[in-house]
Amino acid sequence: MQSTSPRTPGVAELVALALFAKGIRKWILAGLIGITAAWFVVPAAADDSETCVRGSGDAASVACTRLLKSGRFNKSNLALIYSNRANQWERKGDFDKAMQDHAEAIRTDPAYAAGYMHRGNLHARRGDYDRAIADHSEAIRIDPAYANGFYNRGLTYSRKGDHERAIADFTKGIELNANSSQLWGQRCWSRAVVGKQLQEAVDDCTKAGSLAPKIPQIFAYRGFAYLKLGQFDKALADYDAAFALTKSPDHADWLYVRGVAKLKKGDAAGGNADITSAKAGKADIAEEYATYGIK
Image (cartoon, rainbow, N blue to C red; front, side):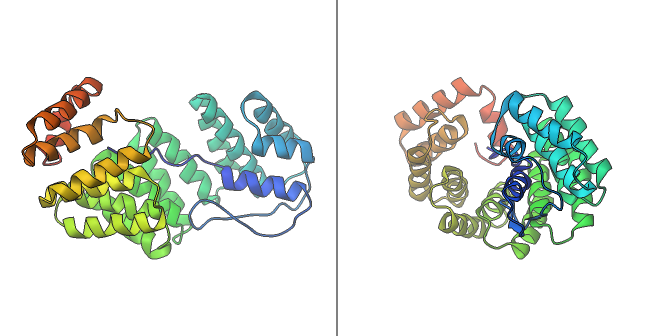
């Protein structure tokens, strides 16, 4: 039931590159938590910068390559461009080339904390959680105030099943950036899975929802916590809200938990219908949720 993969790398840095190409010399606040993108000391061709930033596919990769070959950038800026090109490779599904560019970004500027985070995210996407955690830890070592580093390491711990460590990382991330709905939402999920702080999990998701009221996963996570608390009406209301916000009416995880809630409410027909639909999409879902304490 995990949300999203770690966020796509390089977007904030790409925006910084495009804006500089237009002659704007100022600090750019990145979209990633707590990152401030560096401004470029040497101008690049505006067309290549725009394409590298806002384009996609081969055109964007070629534009980034021309920027790398231009000889106009210092090592910090080169690291950003490598990360931007890695982003394009990832979008195309060429993870090997993306990994090479992430490694080159780190080699070019070993103090580039975001480079380690981005490479860690790709390791996690490929299921190599130990390497992902090692890279995220290095990003945090370089920048101990890097909230997004704690978020992504926590997310990787969560995907690995180590929710206690995930909670610790999300908590640290919240201390650094209390306005991140993702940090609140993911701590909600991990707390609900562990089951020791269920009301706190509900409170976390409520906070996340106040920051991002249209994210369906937040309602699903809170519904899961309500189910464990035995508050079945609230659980059903949250799962219905999650489905109302999503374009995936056949979401297996949500169907399964909603089905369990319906059964516990005495709605055998509705509950069995949801669970049957869930198993059609994910045959082993009952076994998975048994590990979360849901039977």
